Image (tube, rainbow, N blue to C red; front, side, top):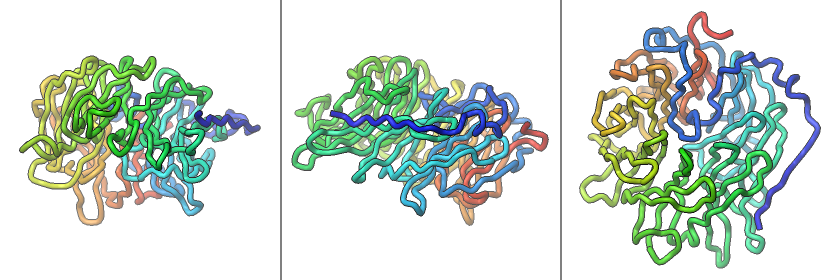
Length: 441
């Protein structure tokens, strides 16, 4: 049995609540990392470019209840989820994308997930999908109405006898379906782990795949899944082939599930923990932390055939530094970009051959990146009081612009759309919006 709760209520009309938002139909970054494939690439941006990005100026800033853990932008409205606030819950906030004015703010409970993980929220034409807390320290996925922030439905993965579960990986939206992974309690205190597909309109289960029968032997990685052409790509590991859904002993890699029913299409063994996934129509890119690879330890970027799982290339990126780089790979189709321990690497998608290298991008840990109209935006290496925000020429790696905003909280992936750059930074409150001197409407 699963718990699906549909809540309704009378709220203000969307037109009233959103009247402060600009008529910005073209402005769209509808889920974290741009789309369900998490490429981090906005192909529609035409205003900001390598020729003018150095002119960016702060247009507005807005303080929220805490640092932003994930955000999206749709039709002139930013939807941002925050850290757990003083009221012991996260908040989902809607802001006018042109001015930063608050439209609504709702509590989403405590989803029990770490702030430092790659996190996501998503939206469609009517709803915003975000992790949310439930009773007795449980958590799931909730849908909130875009007009007034009222909760439309809540889903928590549940066992009728043993109780309610918690979110593993945060939501991804594609084709009327919301995908995420969840823990679920079972007998003797063990935890089952499910990959779940929900009807986005109602929260009803489309399918559920119990990928991990017993958590002592297997686990779904907690980074967001990526969704491509008919497949859902999930980081997955298990230490024995004697359980269902474990293709071999000590498997560390990726499983591709059918979006139609959740059945496995292929497995690929990396010998590594998957830190982040993104997918184009033909290629799956993976950031992996390799520790079962013989001498080839450290951070790797790999590329697989998205339809078959066949490996195309694998490149080691650990350089001479240390630490863990757990960002999601970004690609604009021309190059794929990844932070190693030593800096930002730009590689040819078909071969993994390095095209250029930017050492100002050697940020430690989770470092969000985005690319639009020939510019890649990311966080630089620690410098004094924090991490500067940097724009590179995406074609040759030339440094184009660097902010002096040194106070950085979580380094979430920025949003770039319709001449605006939105970043999370404690310097300006929580969200800073940059545009050209005459930018904005």
